Image (cartoon, rainbow, N blue to C red; front, side, top):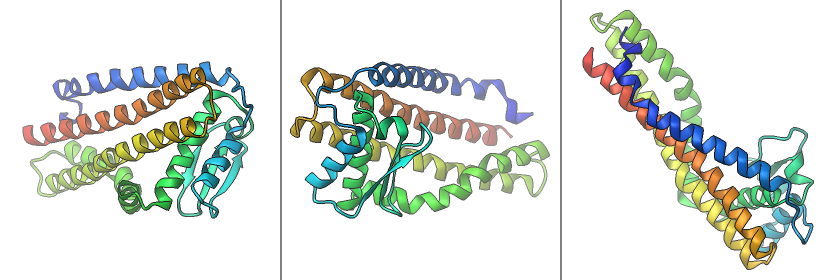
Length: 231
């Protein structure tokens, strides 16, 4: 079956290695610096609120999530949602994550173009990301020799290409939010120099996961194109 062609699968190996490395790095840094309390003792929620106030943003709420996961900025409802261990603690990790999400709120307030573009593409991606691989799989399983199978594969590849584009658009959004976070934390003297070093490691490790995800998506798209070309 073309879908399980091993030569095309080899394309994914470098991306898989990068993804595993990025995940290990982010897990290590998040865990390490979650044990390091900042000298000023400001909780993640306090830091996010101070950053918003510094930028004159008064219409964004900070919400505590019960789970210890899922930190994100919700542009639709204008809320920074922080997990309990980020919202309530004053660790270097908590401050870094909270500042990063505040960076997204600043982007939204300034209509940062990559963020606006990502928001416009997101509703499309919610549909295409779920349909792409099943369509490709069914088309390849039925065999390209049929009349309808090539259409299914081509539609699936187009849908997957939209998902790849979303991953690529996400990169400048995340890197810019991390850069903004580092700059505002340094400017506001929220952290000592040693704590800033740790914060930058946390932000850098987190950014690597987006690079790995984008790389994996691009390699997967190339694999599908190769499978389509050999059929």
